[in-house]
Amino acid sequence: MKKLLLLLTCITFTSSLSAFAQNKSSPYFFGVDIRDMASYSKELIPEVNSLLENLQYSLELFFPKNVKFNPNGVHFQKTKTRLSFLKNKVFSFVMTEGPYDHPFSQTSELHWSALYHSKKWNEFAFRKFKLTFDLNTYELLDIQIKNEIPLSEISFRADVNLLERKIVLSNQKHNLFIVYPLSVGAFDEKVRNSSTVLMTPVFEWAEVRKKNVISSRTIPDYYKARPFLRISTPKEDWTAYGFHTIMNPNLVRGFDSHGCMRLRDKDLYEFYVIVMNQFDDFIPVYFYQYEESKNELPHPYPMTDEYYNRIKNYGTKENPIAKRVSGLTVLERVNADPPTNRLIQTHGEN
Image (cartoon, rainbow, N blue to C red):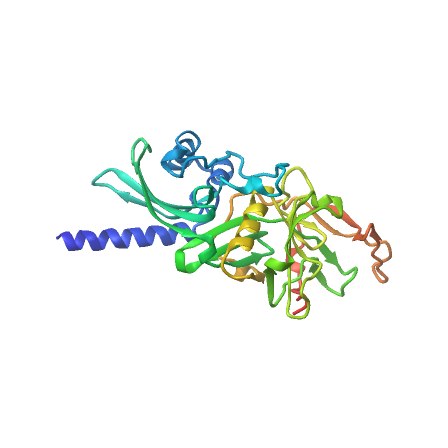
């Protein structure tokens, strides 16, 4: 009888995990920072709110002394030593498994992982937790630190989905994954190309290499002294494309840029930390455009589909002309749904 109960419990757990991974209406978002889950999920998640409160007021239960957890994430600060503000911080705190409900004990189990830096170890590391909550009150009952993995001992891959406007960093061996929302390239509606394409190409083979990362880019000034993570290809050690900070006060998760991919400060700095401190000297980046290529890890940050940017045509439909100002192609805003159904996939240099 005990073996049967254990088997049924395992089946329930596996089915639950699969359902949550595939069901975009679920309030649980795997790989999404807890602060984003609390801010942008359409449904109230009691365990998340309870955990967030504990992180804010009882951080010593989770991390070594002197580590800080900012409710708004890690953001740019001016310091005497460049990028020293990244130390002793908690970056993403993300859910990786669960919820596993235990009706007999009236508890719920969720698994989480967090990237953080500790002065004690002088190392960036992922700390993995098993957290137990009361099924009725959602009070956090137990915190188990499963293990800790130094970032310097593991490597990641990146998957960019242009239509979903997101990037997923993952390490399958250790069940680590983080999802960030993106702003991607505007549309070229037959101005510079014969078909409708995005200004962010689908690179067939791409990397972000440590040696080509600019830790604090100041020229042009719209990079705001934030990191610039260049895209490299076999033909070019680095291209004009990359990941950088946003231009607006808030991220526009839309088709907005001149081709680069924009991230919020807290996501950009975490991506930067992973690139620069992981084991390998590069992160392979895989680009996707079509719906069938998207993975099962959504992000609740709202997409902007009420309008989009496109290359402004200064000529005619028959003889289109694009112009550049200050080195950038002039774009214009269109107050309509993005014409994704007309897209033709284009490839970058490879």
